[in-house]
Length: 133
Image (cartoon, rainbow, N blue to C red; front, side, top):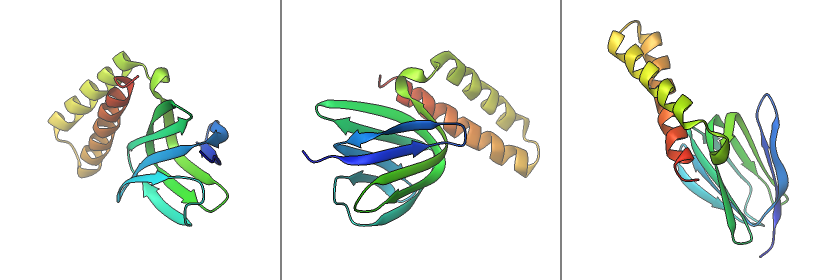
């Protein structure tokens, strides 16, 4: 299968920069599969996942908020956070879920509730991805 270059970047680091056979990303419009030669494409990424394929191997990561940009030469993912499944501390993600649920139960300001909802969604996503190792 023909490969294409993929870059995955966060504000803190270059998470991935290499050739892949395929890429699947959850965008705000749904899951998108990318192969070499894909038409130009731009999409927003919410809290979700990406999965890369290299030969017969697959690697999955949890993503949060960003953009996917594809042109005929490469794909670039710019996100606030990206953690490979094997990097996720499952216990820490469970603690984050519990803290977010407690914040939601406290029913403070609308802004506080919205932040707690995002943190809960991210914690649940991280747990789901970590369990797919």
